[in-house]
Image (cartoon, rainbow, N blue to C red):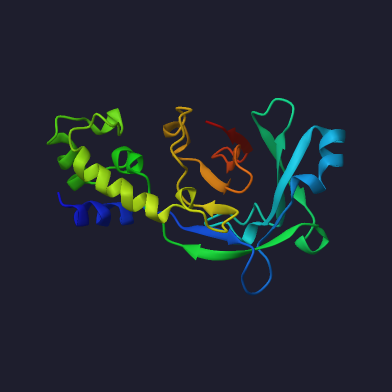
Length: 216
């Protein structure tokens, strides 16, 4: 296995994603709500409204989840939150964000969780089982490190860009230990601005919504 081959295998597993930036053309895809503009709502409801999304811009979202939705976090427990239906973006106050299609490699954890025959053979050749997941102790770490560096170059978590949030794509491997549990769920949005916390909103296979607050 070469780095080029490993990257090619990663590209096969890419999930479409959209970067939300304050610059762009056409109608906005989302509205970002600054905390200082929502203190009254936080005081009265215990929840912070982070952003409101036109769901037409969320990759691969089923038509049944149409319209606009707001992502809110619980500011009392700092653990979860909720997703609620929202009016059209024109009636929302905040920073307009525009959709930019992006290409981001999946994290190495995805290749271990969904290995092709070639990737499986590479993993096994180093005395490792794909089901064990990726860890730093994996003996093929030199090639893995090279892949991780390219992934980091593409993922906005590692940049100082103007990206406020990401729609769709693969979820980021956080230290919480639930990455593999979420692999078959649908990531709607992952926030970058105002982190920590990073906020994830999900639509589950059961059709429910789930909000997760991430901190280190």
